Length: 147
Image 1 (cartoon, rainbow, N blue to C red):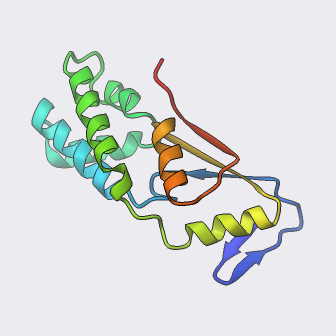
Image 2 (tube, rainbow, N blue to C red):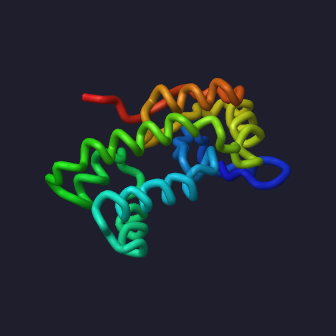
């Protein structure tokens, strides 16, 4: 199934499930998250801004706790950095707009009996809250859980 402006192009094979990424696909949060992570890497670790931005972008898709361990393995400042990043994200998660086509696209998928799943390195409760507040129904939300 491919969604195009004005409807769906039906494939030759029935689509049963669509798995959508959250940040950068459903909500326009990536510029903000990239800025926050870059600032933390520069201010806490003294990294060069271009290097910090590149390191964050290369590890995107993983929970931030995993990203920071890849970028700065074993650094004693990592827990504080993660705490600041996650708190900042949680404080601003409802500020981000959905991409304009998201609600219509998901509604079309559901009309065609396609199960909609949302996947993210974000914490699961944050994803569920944004979807709920936006009136988006997902069959499954897969996000990061502590532990």
